[in-house]
Figure (cartoon, rainbow, N blue to C red):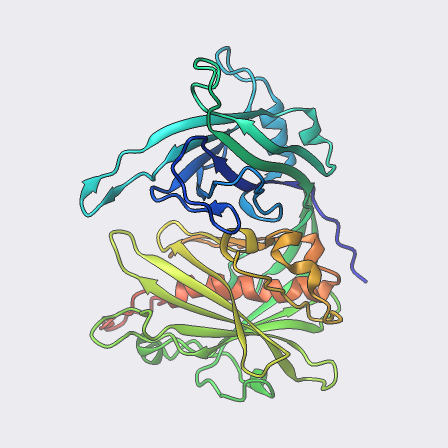
Length: 432
């Protein structure tokens, strides 16, 4: 069996947020926690990372405590990120901090009128040596005064409740060594070491057959039919092979990428779709559905490709669970990810692994949100997808392979959603 070694990551989570403002004229609710009529929000800053903004519920009862399991924000740090944070900075800012600034209201406007927001206070937590020890640690949990006048007037000011926690979050990191359409090798990255682990086989049928889960892979690739692909892109297939040559996952287009009526691009009203499949261990040469990826082009000042992934439930025929819907810049590329903290906070959304027993309780948002990410390039660029997988969601090589197929489908969707050419000049054989 191929051995996969993870890389060290840590997850910094900020949750259990609540705000208590003494003297506020608030009506109590059954839980003692309610939303303020002028919503309270906070900006969460960590040096080297984008600012994150989230809302904070107002706590009106002295006995109430916010949900200890709720996660409002997460940062994922590599070893290099931790080392950078622990390195002394300039004279005016020698130490790095986690900084949470609380406001009444939100930035922006309402009905064209600018909305003012008032800063209530700030919570700061210095980055210390424990950040680099790779062990679970609760950095802070409870109430703390943040009001500006807490010392000046002698009266109690605003109080913030939060839970700040560090948890190891090791990941497997993979890289496609070339453009997906060139059927590259896929390697696992461990520092400067590259270990071959999969191969990727891309093909394109001239006429796509619709025997989805049976003998779909018998067709031969033929990319010469430019006129057909001027009207639609279909028959694209990717198989992922392990080092023994066995196919362990696959993805293929089930709904062609076609221009919508009156335009030359794939629109949300009629997206293209991929089926992500895994081998049927009971029926050799057969496949079982695992997920569905839809993609379309969002027009704007800068176009984006929207990728929407559903997990196909085995328990109920036809049941789908939305796991991710991400916009990726058509020009610059970007990151597709599945992260239950960032997107799916309404309830547990387990992700079955191909060879698992069916007990997916460990994959709930409470257990930690990050599942996978895939970084791809924009249109016309040499894209070599970089894939990261949370170790806790991978129990065997086949688990990793199914995400490689998903990553390949995301990457190819950038190409499949390119605007269609209405006319091709005589003699032109450029790729679409």
